[in-house]
Length: 129
Image (tube, rainbow, N blue to C red; front, side, top):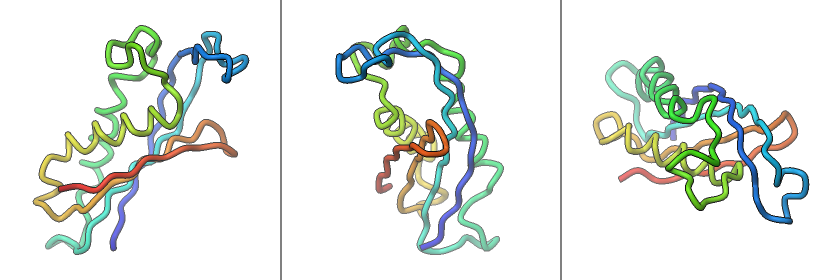
């Protein structure tokens, strides 16, 4: 299986309004480093998984709706906790929608890793049709 990964980052504000989150219950900021990886069984005619620039732009487009936003006020997350895990799933699902047929149907899956800091991260992966 071949993989291609791009990285970007985004800053948000949010609160995690449950006692289990301790001080993170209050409004606070976070800067996430995001890695988006796509998988393919075979390479294309150019010996690539897909165009690197196109994948980087796709990730940037997904993150554009989140950058510098207070997720507590974002309609997509109304009534939902915006944990790192939940945000990883959101980014993965939005990337899958934008990938459409997966580079001509060759892509088999994707994964997203959100890094809160160098020592803590969460991820979500999914198979593509």
